[in-house]
Image (tube, rainbow, N blue to C red; front, top):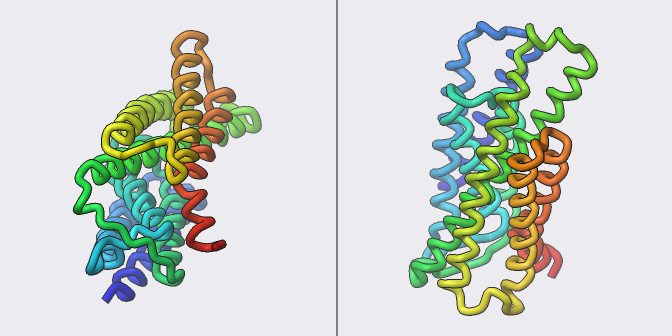
Amino acid sequence: MTTPFAIAAIIFYFFSAALLVRRFVQHQHSENIALPQTVAVLAALAHIVFLVQAIMIAPGQNMSITNVLSLVSWLISSTMLASTRVLPNQILLPVVFCFSALTVAASLLIPVEHIMHIELQPGLVIHITLSLFAYGALVIAFLYALQMSYITYRLKQKGSSLLHSSLPPLMMVEGVMFKLVQIGTVLLVISLISGFVFLEDMFSKQYAHKTVLSMFALVLYVIVLAGQKLKGWRARQAIILNVIGVLLLSVAYFGSRFVREFLL
C-alpha cells in the first residue's frame, strides 16, 4: 500500500517544482501560483500518508535513516508551503520539493530498517520531536542564507535590475533568516536539555558524537546571533557559519546512522 502514495508524492513534488521553475524562467510574476501550490499540497499529503505506513510497522517503528530524512524533508516542505504567502520563499520551493521527492524515493527503494519502540519511552518522543523541529528550522535558515548569497551576487552583477525581478529584498530575506536561526537555536537548546533529562547518558558511546557535534553547532549559532546583535554581521559571516552549523548537525543526526545502516 505504500508504493502508490510514494509514487504520487514524487510525481506531484516534481510537477509542482517544474511549474514554479517555469514561472521564474518565463518571468510570469503575475501568474496565479494556486496551481503549483495545490499540486504541492497533494504531494505533501501523499508524502505523510506514505511515511505513516512506512514508519508505523508492527511491532515498533522503522526509524531508518531514509525514513527520518524523508520525515525531515516533509516537515520542511510543509512549513515552507504553509508560509509561502507571508515569507519570501517561493524561489526556494523548487529545491525543497525536488529534495523531498528524492527522499521519498530513497525511503521507498532502499531497504534499510532501524526498529525502535518509542511508544515505550515518552521522554524519547519529546527529545526526537524537538530535535527534528530544531534541525528543520535551522535547515530552512540555511536555505535562506543561500538565497541571501544569490541575491547578493545578483546585486553585484546587475545592480538595479533586481528591482524588476522576482527576487525578494535582501533585507527581508536577512531578517527571516536571523529569526529562523533564533527559533532553531532555542529549539536546539531545549532538545539538548531534554536529552540530558530523558536519556540515560548523553555522553555514552551511542550518543557522544551527537551530543558533542550538536553542542559545537549550538555554539556557532549563538555566535551568529551575537555577531548580528553586537557587531551588525550581515550576509557573509552568517552564511558561512550557517553552512558549517547545518553540516555539523547533519553529521550528528545522520552520520553514525549512515555508517551502521549502509556501510556495516
